[in-house]
Image (spheres, one colour):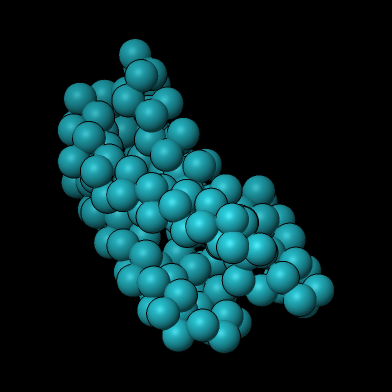
Length: 151
């Protein structure tokens, strides 16, 4: 596998997972009744879009083709969040599933960084975006625990 292919492979997994998160945040922002929570979801969806754009640009710069879709796991997570919301657990249900989505993305970023086969250009892009990924994860984790404590 050449370096261009390795860069595309490394970053396309992250693109797919970030795209899952963006779609789920967009969906949740429309479904929750709480305006502040909806605004938070819209803001984080924007961060996910920026991550997808940045990673896609890095794949193109390496001569690859960026991923255009999300993952099956992400689709199932989004479906589960919708089911929970339909059953009346709107705020906590979406927050819990979105926090799981953040867990997946953070784990994938960390794995890309620790993978010895990750090419330097891909590693540099992941390191540059990691603070945003960590911040989104932290925000949703804090929100999930606060909602759980309030119930």
